[in-house]
Length: 494
Image: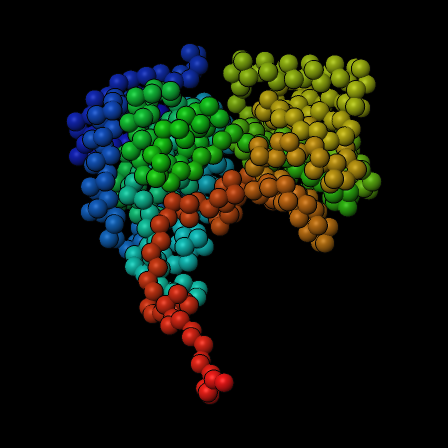
């Protein structure tokens, strides 16, 4: 299935026939993948954007939104069906690209497309817009005021390749609000975006005509400018330098959302540390660490564990190490590149030095072979992102105030906090952590599965890009009322 070249681009048929292509190798020399790419120039970007804009006017602008949403839900189901050639092809090529193991990819496709099938897109849009018909014509909102939402004519989306499945929600967000889509794929993961575009086109040629997915080397200024400067809306993922460059080039009136690099952490209350529940707690925590090998913003790098429970933070650290060892086979990791493995080894060596000198009560637990997982236990709270690849710190703390002080300087780099607590204590802890400005708080074991109606980086997926028209039916405000004039007093002056 993965023999030969992979077409790591998608263009509507009317323009694809005129596109030049080339072949490049991606990945390490010993395990590279050959990809056929569309040759991109400023002129070709202009041609392709004009093509999807014209198609949008014909196939999206006046089409009922609910009909579009049903198409997207059928596409999601094809990626979920174990017997579907679409799913099998996606798994094969994503595994061949070498970043994640097959079980990890299977889990990623299920977790990503699951919420979007069987009415999921419709529920998601309704949660943000109120009703899908508000994208078609003025529709009364909850206060009875008719309003209509308009997506941008087209969107530029720029993807990172740190986790499988990243392009899916952005793809769906553009089409769900009737916007054409021009996407720049990631060299780290160049497979899923064109596969998704091709599947949408197979399901509905009209929608497929409104999509273009290509790749060019990051930092190619003339290409970046050709795409970014004319885009009415930009959604971009990436590191700080690349996203800052994108922000500088964007048109002043463009709607722009940028997601930079972030990590997550977790907090465990003493009341949650019980002997009967320790195994389950550690298994859920290990799953959050292991899934996607800490490459995503929802991966925890530190666990802050309260002292004074039925079992202590050190016992939790030991149980977490055992759970990570179990996942070596249950959710296997691909071996990182040499430079990345070296960073993990260096991190381990530093932790062993701290352990030898008795600094902060440090203890190091690690996989019996290789760098499959590394756990560093220490007293007191601090924030230190790890080199990832299942490398995590466990901090013994006295309470949430200690953690607030440690996280405050870096709060803008934290995407989510996994919180293990119950009842009133959970409410109080969630309030304290939310006050730091962290976008998301979720139970342990669910950090990597954001809600269908949740946010990313504290922002909704549709609302930042929508423009609204309100239809007023009559004078409703004091601004249109006749001015009040005081009555004149009757009677004769003296």
